[in-house]
Length: 174
Length: 358
Image (tube, rainbow over all chains, first blue to last red; front, side, top):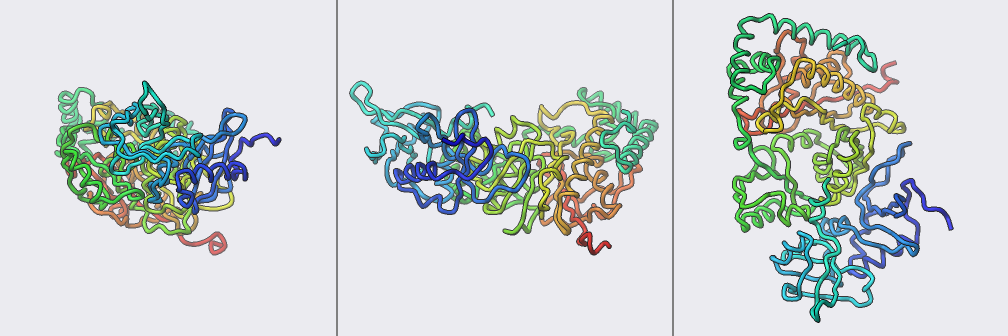
């Protein structure tokens, strides 16, 4: 098996196929049609970027190229979507049709503070059991894409566990 | 400060700094001005006597008005992220939440936040990238680059956390933008901002922008934004802006700015556009630095397509200043324009190619 490249490079077919499967789960595969995928290995993970341009021809390695849309981790290269993917979906005005949950305004605000969502706050739920390995997209009533969550059973009730929310941009400390 | 020991030894720079030092020396011999400066310093304890002299030389009786402006008097503004939403939709959403919003006086996609029931930086709209917080004058640097086009290569030489870089992306979302910054922590924040705002055409490098020529060896830029590190005197209305700046502080900034402009000139294609901006009102760091290039024909002043502000300053101390910078620069003052202090200048590299030069 070829060693993962530390330099920025076009993502290989395997990663592109896994990203495509992820997007299909949200029914948003067309959203990235004008973007190219680039990968870079950092700290044992593969960072996957989507960009509308090709990287400039330079001798220096870029810090970023485009928007990070996912991470590939572990031996099997599991794909973990990033907040940047949601940003691109908003730019492309492509909302998920599947595998998403819409929460009420109060829950949306709490979700952005890193909290989970109780079933009483759910306005709409479209779960695709074939996409269990991927988190659901969490949306506000205004259809802002707030982050990702996973449905779990907690004390007999449905709970959307906060996996990653846009409040991270403030909490990240940078 | 030992001017002869400047790094990257450059005769033009040495001459410029010598001229500056002489001008400062004359200033310290002006007894009338010194008396007034001491009065100012007595009222504003944090002020350096050198600063007081310079502000009196630049602004005269307005100097105190400039120093008196508080943070509350400067417009608080946000930039609508037109990649994701439009101005009226965003305004409607914020007003529904109790914010009082007005139109920015100088730029279409800017909004002024008059009243905020809670922090404007903590709304879902901010976190999901529908807008970003940006100073009212700072927002005008990117429009000064226009017209941009799809065949451009645009470079943001000192991108910091990417506020202006992402603004360029709003203007041209499919044109390559190169962003540089010497500070890795700021690049981490730039990565977050490009993600939050959906700016997908930015390639960022961790490097010293003075070495730009090493980075782009096969092509030249059509547009460069150089938002240069500066003394930050435009931020004096804010608590973080109130610190003393000596003559040496200004001279050291001028040295760096000169080197950055020199790198920009090398990286620009013929007829390429350079927008030079700083968050300072200091003539030394703006018109004086740029005069070192315009007087040698390395850059030509160009009129920036932006509204508002005052003309560039071309008469200050005894410094040699290119008179054309009067219309090539726009200056914003807290006490005149209710913005942070800011200077934006537009220039072009001459249009002849090396072959034409002969």
